[in-house]
Image (cartoon, rainbow, N blue to C red; front, side, top):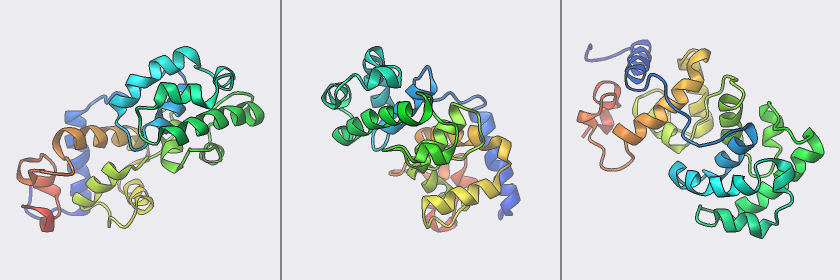
Length: 215
């Protein structure tokens, strides 16, 4: 590779490397329906996917639809999820959004960002994951990890996750967004951690990383 890459060369190298390492990246949150995915993604905020996958089987055994979830009390939901971060607030949001799915959407998870973001506890990132992974719509969910890597690789200014999402959508073809979102998550976990990261040994940072961050 040349010592100084153009933006297009960076994008191509990143996409090729991620395709080589994670050709078919699996969805990390276990689910069997759009509703289960919505709940799992809501629970995943400030909590690992591993922890969410530990608590959702028992929760979904009791309530895998909005109709069943509203029959549980908030405390019963909390009993299932209390080991995840921010569990009390998430339990209230799960109960209330289940009520709203019944009141507004006939018990179905809506397929638009706007309607999803109107539900309690569902921000833009959560809504983007649901439309991408449940309904196959092009989206580029950006969490703090993808935000960090996009800055490291010189693809975004790093100002905020909203700007990073716009920058990544401009950089990569729309039909690759859903796959890239997952690929970057897996790459960050395996090769590009936030702390104690060896830039020189990283398959991407060593080639496309910001020189000011190389150590």
